[in-house]
Amino acid sequence: MEATKDPIGMAIWDYYLNDNPIDIIVECDIMEDDFIPVDYLFRKYKDFPTIEKKAMEYCEGKILDVGAAAGPHTKYLLDKGFDVTTVEVSPNAHRYLIKELPAGKHYLTPILNFNDGKYDTILLMMNGIGLSEDFDGVVPFLKHLASLLNDSGSILAESTDVYDIFEDEDGGLWVDLNTRYYGEFNFNMKYKNVESGWFKWLYLDENNFIKFAEEAGLKAEILLNEENSFLIQLKKLK
Image 1 (spheres, one colour):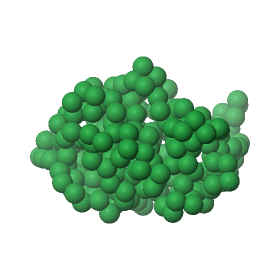
Image 2 (cartoon, rainbow, N blue to C red):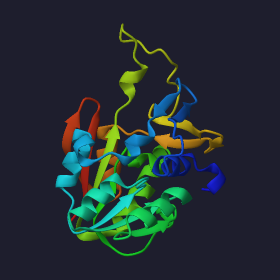
Image 3 (cartoon, rainbow, N blue to C red):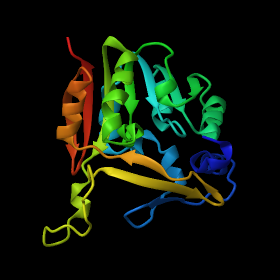
Image 4 (cartoon, rainbow, N blue to C red):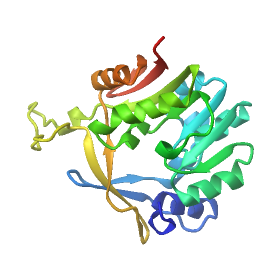
């Protein structure tokens, strides 16, 4: 990601420098705009959602935090004495992580280009499976992550089944879901005068997540359900 197309990173630095941070706008091709308060990227453990707290309980050994942003999970795990590595595509988020969390190792690269070492835990928080972009991308994405796992390691991923958001009060659908899969979205993030440009993002339901995991040679277990979101643990099949 170019520094000029880095709204998340710019927001992180504005918040860090107390330079008039504002909410990040998330545009969607089929829904109304959403907003991400910048301080949410800096949340402490006490403010973690239940799923994130549960994921922290299952972290072991050498940890890879994919899409770390301002590093709330990395900071918590470093404070607990873990060896943590981050992978980010945001140049400014990466710069912030290097400056504020020097005990970790930090890489500026897309996860699919990352091949440095083996890990006991790979974290995909904040719907990290979305980095696979679409239905076709899930199995190759999971296979790559599996190649970064130690034999006894696990991937901890958070996802959401978004079908319900398309239902109206009568149980009908308020949009035409004549698409390959209802969890495929296009987003554009805006922060002040900086935009990411449109990008693909995926929300994956439990059944398809388990199915794709098996196709990638991984055994899946749901660790926690919370409304339509869930925490899933993936381990190599033996």
